[in-house]
Image 1 (cartoon, each protein chain N blue to C red):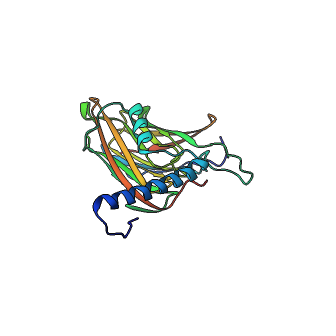
Image 2: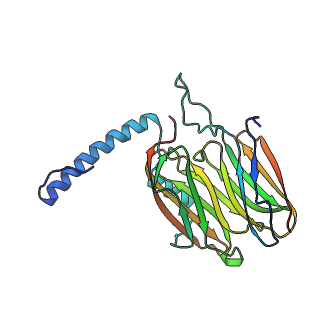
Image 3: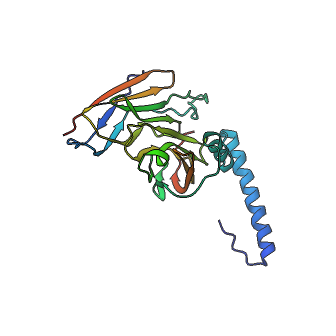
Length: 109
Length: 158
């Protein structure tokens, strides 16, 4: 994976059982569309994050297929229902197959 | 653009049609020279390959700015009114845009860990265009919503 990808994740600091919890994620990525041309008129090859997934204690929360229409440094936020303490596992897949992974511990009170 | 000529209706219409047709041809020529662009038809065709069937109104909604000053990053929220159980569960959502170089925006699937459907992301819009989102429910019903977003500065480089 290009080293320019750095996942940042934010969840509320206190979570109660049964809460609907918003997860905000951001990765640094150019999301090169494959539509642009360089100074020589050659097309700059496409290089985007094409998939984002999140699982909560092994259960799928969201699985996204992403097209070049998503902005650079893709921001994605979504909700899950907190039933137990555990962890969120997230993965961003880049064109070419490289994967950036991130984990977020969830403590339910 | 409005042509400030007061004539009888058919004349005016013909004048407008000639003007727009000529204009459209010019614009299309200029665009095609650069890149193939999505059209409402290709966006609809893509949606039908992703979620085949007739779309009903309701349940799904799109939150987006009416006017996006910067087409490079337009915040979008897609929401579905659902308890995420049984037939009412949201299985998938597809989003397409009809005026970008390519019509696809994203597709997402929701699993059993999902709480409610309210997903936010940021998209690129090359020009003023319509955004269409379709939700596929647990019982196979399809709901769609369309939003037009005016774009001041396009966001597809090029």
